[in-house]
Length: 339
Image (cartoon, rainbow, N blue to C red; front, side, top):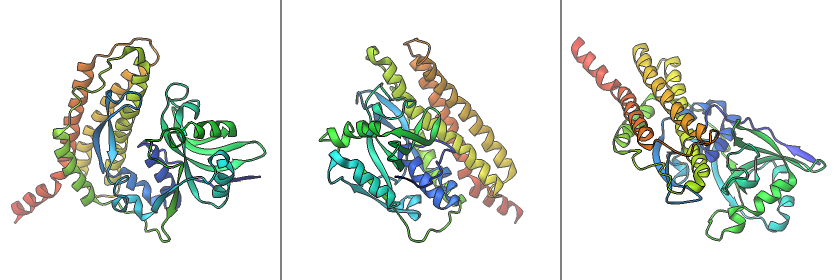
């Protein structure tokens, strides 16, 4: 027996495993939600590494998708996701296949150590993760999964024994303090309204980002004290850096969309594009520094230089959002002058 349902992987840019999975579902159901992914509803934050909570790295977080799903953009497509516990975890594959054959969209908790061969964590370090399983072939003993590796977010075929090993070693199965279920099942809205990009919403987030970026700093981050785990720390750092770099690519797409929809003047578009291009190049250069450390054997980081460059990019991004915040005020000045 075999069964699969088509989901077009959302890979315009990388947000995180949860959001790219959610946007895969949303854009498959209603393509206009590709513009919702571009909304600048994110913030910078820091987090402790899974292997060492004292090692602090930066990343981005999208507002409301975890704590206030009812306020999240995709709530208009995905009504909710419910926690699912398998009746018999030792025989979870039977229930998993029933759920998939019933055309329910499920994401399974797995340990990335055993998961995709080209994922940066595979055979390197343990990290719990939820991945969409959207098909199976019982004769070939293969499963269709949607997930990311170094080649991007896409569809993969995984042998049954690896699915079992990754689930049985996941946080949901082995860690009493993990707090997450075996799996989640998505529930779609009965009626889905197409998405329309709003300049006012973008300006509101631009004003918020302008305030928040003024208070954020990269000072003290990426500080590797245990050089025996240098390679692991670098790979973990790349997770957050890749999210930040990818978001700048999305900001470029957002600005391009505003121009194509005639929501901003051509002069402002050109100025915003200059800013975002500089920011994109800057984060690509920081990302490349960390990538180089994974291949050249050099176990040193010029932290002061990296932190200084990242802080410069923060200021440049703050200036970019300021340009959008100022649109209404500038238009009012012109109206007063003309009157």
